Length: 591
Image (cartoon, rainbow, N blue to C red; front, side, top):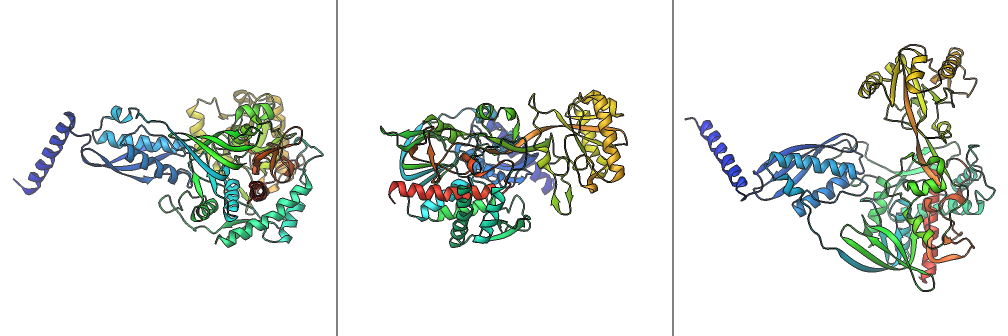
């Protein structure tokens, strides 16, 4: 008998013995390393799981296409939870649910190959509720860029700070001025921001005094960053000359070497905060504010994964963002956008605004939402002269029209698309193309696949004629035919006489088959929030302040903006209002 055959027989015997032992309940797994796959946010992810006879010993992520600054958090936390509990009945990471679910499914597949009792591994694990109390000088609720800026400012000024965040990670980006000249340019831009006639205008907004203050306050933020070794680079310039400033990032990175939690700037803010002794609690959701007998805010009640946390504080700063993910508040204050999609993170849930309203705070007047139209799926991102031209990612060469078959706008900039919320219901707008254009864009196979997947019932549609396209989409046939003919005449002339679309992007829709994809409105910035004083204190209907309560960033944004989008200038507002609120909270607690 050859040595190889002996070895194979011995290995087989060991496997059979291990399987027999497992069947008898003496072991949980057949020792080894097993592969598994699951579906994350953006597709398949894969893992290798190591087990001994009685223990899961390791989980290695070997591939993923999920969001680069989210999946490392999900992988790190889910691995820790599964290994600690030796169970699949663990909490997913807030804000990374689909990636977490994908990891669980992948580990489950691997453990199935290892002979595990999957039902036993999924059995709920009883946990005793942990109810704790902690104290701090100032509680900052929300660890996006706004909350991180406030927490760092407080910490530098000697406060005992607690920063809590609903999500399992921190995140954000930034724009600021590093000198008075750039601060003035930002102010000049913001004070004249009246873009779109369909957004509400109000003579109260913008409050130019507050706008000027936040623009110049961003110089303090820049100086703080330099003191903490956060070196920024000029990433881009607008025509007005004010810079977006971002940290230098690696030229190349993959899921294995990306900076942990990936959102490079906020990672540096977080690192600075923790390095200087700050306390950060993730997956901790503030649910109500605590007041004393005089109505002063003295802390908050929060929910954690393990129970409840009572936080006693001298003051509270709300940095929880807008109402974008709270459909009840959207329905009440922005009904035209109810039921739509938003690109805002899950943690932007209106919770801070709700807590303030419970204490008598009031919403600002004439709130609005900046957004744009988006495909049901990503198609192409077309650039003109190096400039990003459309939002996520309707082809700027296609034609954009309504359910009535009428062309709505020029298609080469998403600022024009964002005007068209259909008040009788969303998802009633279409991007129309022909086969030649989709072939040029490399999207013809994708469209064909999507058309076939849903039997030409949407959101992707195909027809041999414009009249048939109108029939399958529900558009008005006569109007659509006339619209296409007029649009094609502009393409022949090289000039869009209706909307002035960039001539480079005029592409005739004249070669069948024809395609349409139904689009929806995607909300970016929900402008408004609650009313605050110049010092960031939250105020009631009678104009009096709620003692000990402050708000910053998009939790209270209306006074800083006119109508339309401020683009990344909103980030000046976020970081600067946080420094202002932090300084006010310090004065309030007497430090």
